Length: 299
Image (cartoon, rainbow, N blue to C red; front, side, top):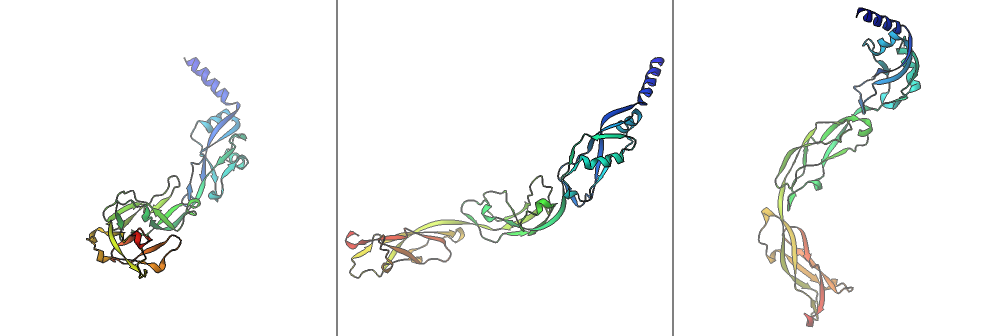
């Protein structure tokens, strides 16, 4: 056993005194101001090198933890997209004293670093996108507190943002006054932080009803001999009213007229016009709006 151990030791020492060529993965580190930049993709951590050196030196460089990574300094990291083999070779040769660097196997080191900036934007919410219960409507201004946030992230993305940034509610079928915190959503993968990350959104909603009432038509400026008359003497008035202000509306609350002097000769119709109606109602429609004229004998 002693002879075997001694022979093996002698062979190893003898072998390590010879020169060898080898391919080694050597660690690298990137030196730049990390507080003012954002690393968009993981940076390369090793470079593959073909070297020639004595066995002892190769063992020290590859197996032992005596060596510090090769430092590559970046003065303007956001303006550099890659490091080529020709750019890296002088740095590698300078750092690896004692090794004869034959060539670099690694062709190009790609880097993706962006300058970090901040941008203040106003927070908005699209009222049309809010999901309300049927017949409910927003009846107050939408208040957002705070009304703006500061985004911190890569310049390449923040430069594309408008001054207004829209957020969206996940709530559906809202049927009561709204007062909740909403997340300021930022897309994944862009390394963006919102300060603050939430805002409070507040607004009131109320229920509205759609109603219909039949109203007689008052004829205006029709021939005194009654030779022509309207083909119908009443129309439907359809309208929207706040549920809390709903009541039994009467014919006296509305007035509909049809003026013969405004006869449209193309289709022999006159327009039914709403002269007055209760001030609390909204979205008033007359059905039908155009009334045919007919000889009185056909009426």
